[in-house]
Image (tube, rainbow, N blue to C red; front, side, top):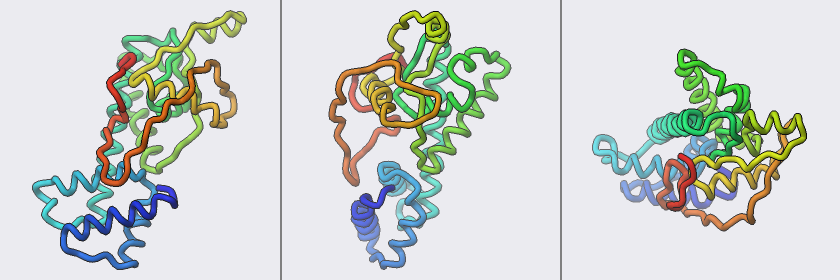
Length: 230
């Protein structure tokens, strides 16, 4: 969370504890903030909602450890969903084409693992180990709430060849939610990652709209029905 999330966080925690008939001291609030501040506010909201709906533990007021367990489970789920997108893209689109996923963190993890082209060289026997490495790296970034710089486009074999010959390349294939993938491509212009530069330009950013405290967020990051390759 950011400092400007504190008031929303305070109001949300106060409301939850009030639901259980408990007041919140300043000390307790500081403990909650310190324990959870490394996580995104929407993820925290989702974790509280799942605790409240839990038939086993939801009858008791949550402690920071309860919510952290929920959040850790969330990072595992997110990593599995992210890998499922990568696996489908490798099998259906292939590494010949450039691709842009709807999750910038996928770009960074794949680059750290050797790039999109390198991913396509892995054998079926290696694939389970590649999956585990991807999931561990992805979870690491998510659990630390990092927003690392990333490559705007994952370069495929065709573009790598064309750039050597100074030929023009085609547009990248968008994977997942089209609007979010376009935003990943667009917002990379404000990132600073040595060795990468934006190769494409897309239309002006459409307002996405943010959900406030208590709003339900789709855990897969999807907003809207328009989908690209998935």
